[in-house]
Image (tube, rainbow, N blue to C red):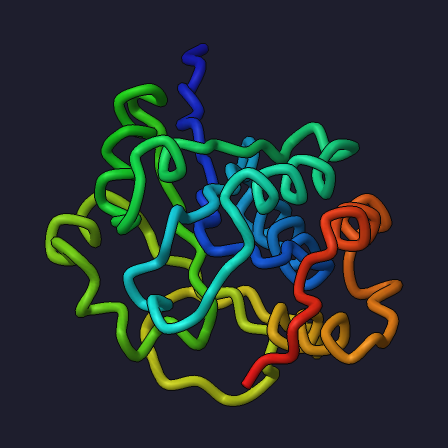
Length: 195
């Protein structure tokens, strides 16, 4: 009787997470269950090369919010490699670093539906697509036209909406974990209206 060796399968969820919110967490859990992953590693970007046009919360505060959001989820973890490496954050560098640590693991890289149109312009994309399987996390519920596997769930929550609600003095309760809401209030984040 032969025992088949199971391949370690890991999800990598990169992004600005400014702030992390329930849609991120729900879709990460959905992907983890659907793909039967060992776990999901959240990787906050120092500064996304595709989001250079806006001010973001400091790396240390975004990291603090991420850690607070996943504290009770044992299969979620945070890797601050991009924050330690500095800007700009290139996904290929992150994947190579994680693969060095997680020898032989199959890597699923999560991207938002809004990132699909520009995906092929990512730094060293030809190499990257050989190293990972891209998984599109779609919270729009709209029909999509690409060949990537999709984890879909209609969730109308966005970081932009959260920042704008805070800036205008409205509640973000139920949009983010309570611990994240407390950090946003304590650090007085997102108080200036977005122009």
